[in-house]
Image 1 (spheres, rainbow, N blue to C red):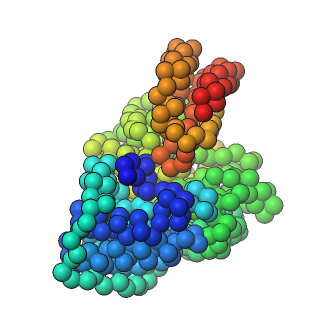
Image 2: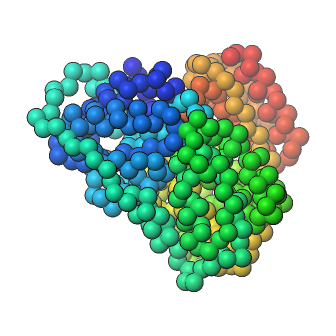
Image 3: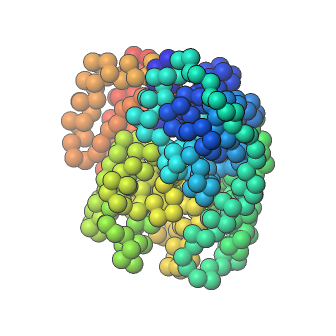
Length: 441
């Protein structure tokens, strides 16, 4: 098997591609490459029905390789990054398919620094995945990591820099997507004084991400309207991303969130160096808005681990993705939805300005996103006809926009993104490219 890992770990149909047998092999191979007998690994998961099955398989594989395992239970993905460092563990793993539907599941792996594994490390694991690995001389233990959720919640509350923050006048609608944030997110926001309207905040893995959460904002928009809330906060199933919805129904996406934070830090003189890291998907409007204030935008390939590594390389503090993975490098090396929501609410409190007004400082270009189902996406993207159409589209856009066509790293699909400074131009380029791709899928 090759290319098991995508842009965010291993992901696929539970009990189809992602079986207990594969999880055991993956655990043993990971232990062989990344851990030492007697070392410790922390495992967390989201609420999916297949989660306990795969969690048990991972734990068994690691223990059979001589690694001790601590189970954190249902907990947001970024909590594992924090807990690895807090426990001084060797590795971390999360059983989650993030924003994917309930039938999928995935395995994300983290190193001793709480960072996702590099491509080189993943490739090294894949090369021995089906080898007959020698059994370890010792059998690792499997136990429960006590107070994991409470420790993570305390960490989140401790990221607030402004003294005496009180959100008592705020009503927040919070959509937890039936996922891993169902308990921690409302608790942390209430700790800051807010009145919280909980939506889809029960651990029901059979409904995770279904018509709710950050990938289906209709639910949170309705919640904001129905409850006259001051803000809507929508997480995905494992809590590493967040999107916001204002009382007027406008979405504040990852680009605008990065812009709000960057401009605020720049004004305070705390954005040092004056760099924001984003992926190739981020909007040109963000790049121009930051550039006008002397802030450079560094772009990476898609995936928050690429953003995380670039933050290290550039010694930068802020980065993320349009989809709502935002990394505050001073606090965490990975995207964290709850942390992002907390920090944005802190900025609104400190500036005495609502987030919709702050978002207006980041005028975005019109953009279209298309997801086109395709089983052999990587091959189709490289077809001469697709590449020719792509070059034609880029010529039509010139310096007025940009286009990205890529194989999804998390689903069997092609992702098409078009940005332009004019709605009609954006629409025309999108329609032409989409039609060409559909003819070849």
